[in-house]
Length: 327
Image (cartoon, rainbow, N blue to C red; front, side):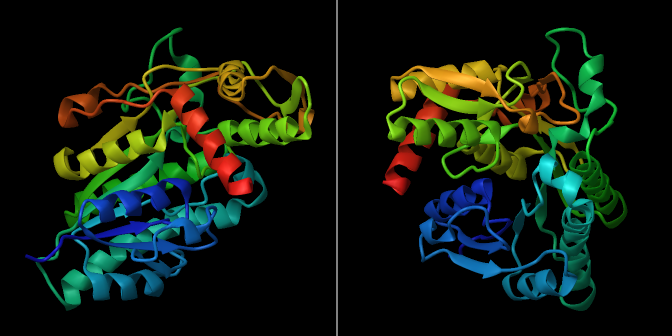
């Protein structure tokens, strides 16, 4: 019996690198693409096929799609950092919008020139950053729903709105089986350049210096974020590819919010040491939503998804990973 073929773009990122491993362990025939990876791809087992591919260039994607012909595609490739998008708006839009067009135009090309029946499922990694100012309009304690207005506050968020609406357009006009996943804050062992990984990295450096208490530089500690483990996110993406409604959009989010102070406390517990925080003005963003929290009732109803990993467990795993990797 032939194995199902699955393509994961962005396998050089934190989520994608774990996802190709999960799919391989399920016995599937998986191919991952990467470009300027943010993780050490040497950590991905060599038996998993990885191809360097800049998704901004359609021909690169098309060649892989023609050869591999996946039945499921998880499009995770992106410039995924809001802070970077302020400095690199052109590259952000080129990767996030045009990279998405490359996937869908490749499907259309295969249908036209090779196989009219080609009908893969495409799960597109969109973002909670699309909601932007809509978070501020919510009553206290209320989670944002997929029907909220999209009012992004930085170039990254705007680029993800483009990706989101492009995906819907290809569903509506070309009948491609698309699922749009609006992903909220996610972290894990291989993550870099988010609040959890930055705090963990700074705390470990201070801890190894023998500081007592440890000292770390921080930005805004009062923002509330619902932060999920990447393994819970991967579980949701897989479930959506099997049980989601084509053309629809789903929030994927942790079930409770935490502040930067909560993250610091989790690190203190894992390292068994006190931490003193010093605010660095350079770490404060021009705009910063006070609360980012998503309603996942549609996801739960359609797929039965459940969050299984607590933030404290994620932080502990991140610290263990860094300690082992850095020696």
